[in-house]
Image (cartoon, rainbow, N blue to C red):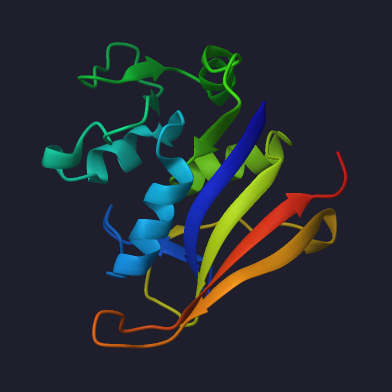
Length: 168
């Protein structure tokens, strides 16, 4: 089983503010859908609640929500109380995707659960209250998958990257 992070991250590690995305980048959203469709997605409760109701649960994926709240319900989702429970629930899957938010990314990296990361690096800094955790880049092999410039639909330039763990 491969455990993959999928995230969009600004220059200052920002990933969100007020429980919402800070940017609207349609091609990054398409990249996210491409990388996660058909795979279980693991997310924290706050991240789940930030998804507009009409898109919950995320279609075409098994949605797994992690929360400390013992009586929490999320229609159409599996609710668990730890990242370990979430991963155990998916043990027979080929790949699972950890999709945030900041606390869940941090937990997954600290517990050394991640094999690969698809990171969209946005070439701008943002005012934010949620951040992607720092990680030791020497533990990862980095490959650029593509570049995207500013255009009519994208106010910021960004780079699609994949990081593959080189030590475990």
